[in-house]
Amino acid sequence: MRFQRAYLIGFALHFFLLVTVASRDFFAVLADGSSYLPAALEPRWRALEDANFTVLGQKLPPNNPMRETIAFYLHAAGIEAGYGYFAPNVPYSYKLVFQLTYPDGTTEYELPSVATTETGRRLPTLLDYIAANRYEPLRQLILKMLAYSVWQHHRDALKIRAVFGAVITPSMSGYKRGDEPSYAVVCAYDFGFSKTERSPP
Amino acid sequence: MNEWFFGGTTDNWLAALRIGLGLQLVLYCMISRADWRQMFALDPGSFVTRDLTEALVTLGSTLVPRVSWFISAGEFIGLSEATVLWVAWSGLLAAGLCLVAGIFCRSAAIAGWFLHLSAIKSSALLSYGVDNFTSIGLFYLMLSPLPDHLALDSSWRKWPAKNAQLQSFWQRVLQLHLCVIYFFSGLTKLLGSGWWNGESLWRALTRPPFDIVPSEVLIRGKYLFIPLGLGICLLETSYPIFIWLRRTRLIWLVGIIAMHGAIAVLMGLYLFGLIMAVLNVAAFGIDLFRLHGKKVI
Image 1 (cartoon, helix red, strand yellow):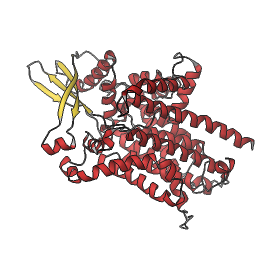
Image 2 (cartoon, each protein chain N blue to C red):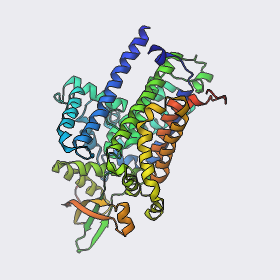
Image 3 (cartoon, chains in turn green, brown):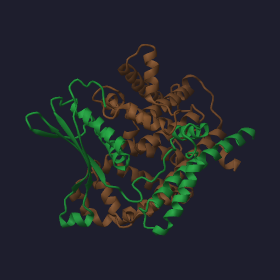
Image 4 (cartoon, rainbow over the protein chains, first blue to last red):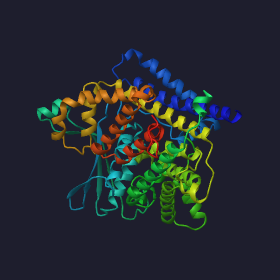
């Protein structure tokens, strides 16, 4: 009986964390105003989201042992994120295009390339992260790294312009009308690398 | 409650989970082999360098395992980064193969969980749902009472059968976890207008790089988008109810697996489809059939 009680207590803690994380992300969706619920309720959803952050120790100082331990457990158990895949609505996808300029003035276009289709299906995570990230230096750093990986295969290029944008696919009715997918630029950066550079940015 | 959690069950569910997760790890290794170095090396030309991804993960917790731990340990004994990455990849593959065969089950489950977790955290900017669900499965697998009776550990090494009460406990944990996953997934979808008018399903299938089926083919089934979109929401939200009822369990299980099968085929997310099928079959599917062919229900 004693071992059963220990297992049940462990389960209760685990399940509590699992539901708290799932609720946190659920309230975040509601607070963002992307659902059809009244906007007047958004501050309440935000308060509930904040409460879940507090329960998970995510408002403690970064080096707090309790915060570290909870975060480690969440990652270890695979429960650090909620389950709102493709919800409440499916987001736009993003595209990254590199424009390479050579000393003679010619230009060439490249896309981020990976060896396998499966890894290619992982790229949207990275592109979504770039799009969602509002911290400009980090966004620029990630794009510079990607540009650098492209430059490794085109070391004669004088300049690489990374153009990041949203792919707006037509709705069902738009498609029936003959609308084509369009591309809205989110940001663009110019990078130059010298041939003596040996390490990534 | 004790009776519900510790009522005792066979270990067939655990065999399904072990073999399924082993297969998942093997496929993950085979598929990512060509990009493994690019995903984790710090060499010039790496995609997004490992140190950036790990720095972002470390913001959450410095205790989360990551590939640079292995690299540092390797450097300590004089191994290059490339060698360590190759060893880590081989170790993960070996763990997957051992799980499929049922050899050194516990050690393989722990090694598989640790290596897989390290890999997905060090490539967090390239990971998606499949990695989380594999982590969840491996976490429960390594804590469950291994080996099951179908594992080679049981027949070759004559390991005795494990506690049936713990078998049922861990199966219950997995079952309840799946209920939470589908409930929140369905509920969040229901809050978006796109799932009521079919637009979300349309957009999911036409969104690059998941647009495997041409739009001109998809548009022919335009009348199915609304019922299918709503059907997915209802299937997921009501999963925690109807998966428990004996009369509806098979319908919900088949429905959910068919949904994941369709996602795999129509969006090319094969690994995601496989892991969800494995988790569902292990949690609820095995009870419907005995492995020896006799029906339980």
